Length: 525
Image (tube, rainbow, N blue to C red; front, side, top):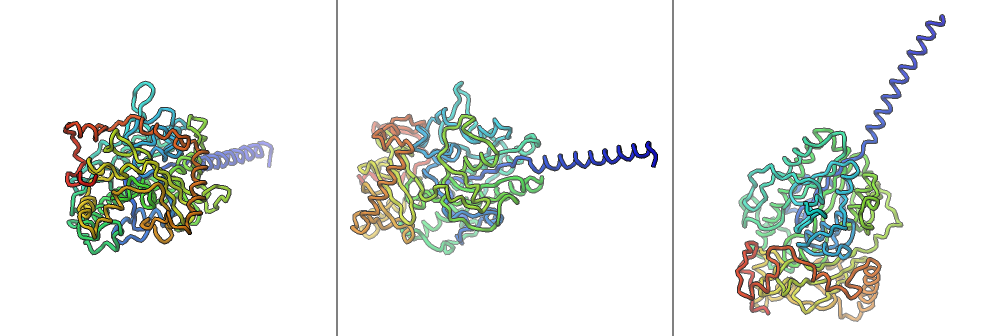
């Protein structure tokens, strides 16, 4: 081979090698593309069929569980929408969030959300349905804060029942996908407004469900057709959430982005029924949760019994994105990433021994809008609860209709039960006053029916749990542990119906269509 031919051969080899290297580099960049985030949160859902509930059908949640991890021990630290969601987006317990511990608050400007941080780091953010709320969140200049991203709620549809939101969640997600810059990763918040009340009574029966489908009614409610129908109407709305979840996942699959998207499906707290939503019992705070993430999730189809809190969502998703939230204004995060669980390599150095929970002011209806402050700790098989103002009515004042319980047929049935000595205990359990402390063995009593406080054999357990809970809360800077708990009642209530009790007592007629007149029972004072 002459020198010219040799030169051309070397150049050809170099060009081919360069092309191969360029292709390899491009391929590597594609492989290193930052993952998308799809965060799906139902409003007040405590049940999905993956957990064995036969009276509800959620094939899409179940699919996420089959292709990912189903979590058996996920909890919110505050069982009301606004404070629970505040904990989700900040990674802090509600008692660490000042005004944001309350329902209908003015969200403090000092607390930054993980979607806000992700947007600063190149993510396209958006949401449909319900993001954080209810309440007000504004920037220093008075403009609305996009705590969960830009709203996509304009596309509407005809819902299955008149009480289901007309927002077409999946179509709005499609609009978000069409508008986004495809070269950037995205973080999208799918926040259905279901199964939040109200419901169209008997809509489930019209859809083909039967009261016989309910395998069991919790023993703190009457077991009759009214309550069973109410449960089925709730199930129908959970299934509406699941239907849109399926359509959203299908859209991601159709554009080839599902494999590169971590999908978290959960709820903000338990079902909107008496003794559940807005309280501090096991099923008040226990939430369903499933996660999938293509090939990044190891050993799909498994169940995890690790204790997971909603304050763990923010640190996990920030780790997924490779972002340090505190460098972008987030207050110190209390939660822990559960990436180790996703990778099926549990980090034993992470403190998941206990679950901390509690509440301050939720809904209106007490004098001066006072809350019903509680703190609780779940450790092992015991749930310990402290009620800091036991002289107050835990479910809201009887005069205003126990307004910390959503109006419902089940609620009305319980109020009716009060007037019969043989059924009055239903009212006692959901609406009656409580002692300063409660202790339950949730391994045998997850409904929390048998309070062990006062039994000598459990005295030491209660004392030890109270001591540990108090120490943890002090370390977290809980104002109530410093004798400053009244600050939570002094924060302004941003609800249009604030100060409901005093205004009603003064004779003012307040528009409150969400109140069920049959829930009023002044004789309960």
